[in-house]
Length: 242
Image (cartoon, rainbow, N blue to C red):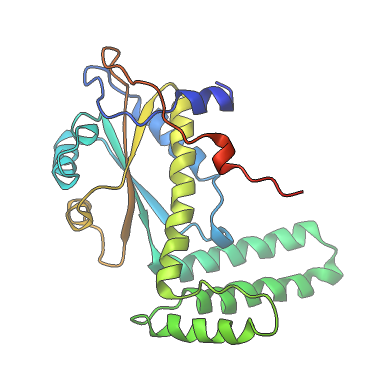
């Protein structure tokens, strides 16, 4: 499919054809494609749990308040954000950037650009993602508000703001996955109505992990009409500034 065809094909499917299986390896490949999605500072603080076990799907269906889009799904993907992975992801990014610098720039510039990347991933990123019961976030906010008196500066730096950034990045990954699935002719539905504690318990996730979204996967039932899409008129949402 073209990107337009994939977008037009994608619908939030609430009832799947339980007689039609999916190719789990194809679903896995769509998740691999989803890793191409952008994330804030390329930190990639997310994980995907690809659930094919029927008993676990039913258990997650109960955690999903009995929604049929989970109960009838062939497979599920649970997207999770991991704020506890900041150090390891920063370290991986820095190692990658060091290699890129040596491949891209002349030797006399290696030290300069390496120091810039080290400053970013060793100092700024740990400062922006540090947590301590909201106290570090309050300190960051005070620092940024003060700095903002003299120059433009990011102001959404509290710990709750950090969670928003994590989930926004994860949502980009989930959307990329759903479009990749659509291109394969498969169907999905993004789900936010669930008991996150029960989902984490079913997947044996640590306390610090945050469930961002569940995406049900399957093939839509041909005998269930989808109806027309409702969208706000484009003119109400589009604002061109010349």
